[in-house]
Length: 215
Image (tube, rainbow, N blue to C red; front, side):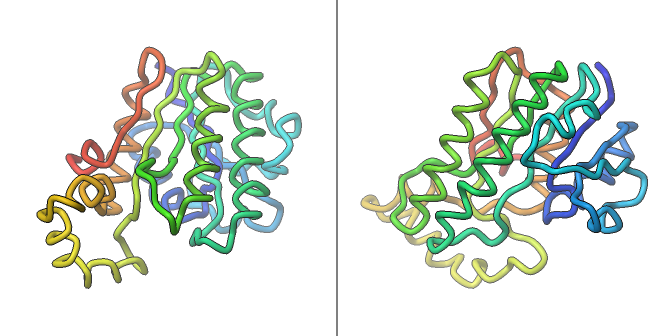
């Protein structure tokens, strides 16, 4: 397996922590960045300064047979950001899939979101589902991760409601939905991402919350 990774969202919450892990595992990591943000990337990776919404602009920097990790998306997604979901998430996935296909990538890794219906984050879930469809309609081997909320630095507040979450898992009327939207920890997400990179599937593999929580 070619130990080459191309990543978008390398300065984000997951990306800036995942890149050092991959470098330690012996991967060569190229990270897509907008001009002026390359200094924020973890040391050791190779910055690729380009427009993340223009596949033609950066496809030539993606190594044939490499793994493409798509992490770019709206930060702190919420109900008021529907327009941004399509302007950023959907547009960047479209460009990344185009670049990965053109470059002949071996594997595409994407962080989506849990698909259990909710009223609060409905628009976000719909957009991410459409992003998944873009990926699965290609011939790319793909790993898709579907967390709900990731607990980590700056994102610990849901732990205050953990007793309530546990109660909802017990109550028959809310049990299935509560379990389908369980919290995952940052370390579990990072370990699952690293595992996905090192174990590409034959076609498409989806990591639901329960599998992410096992890491």
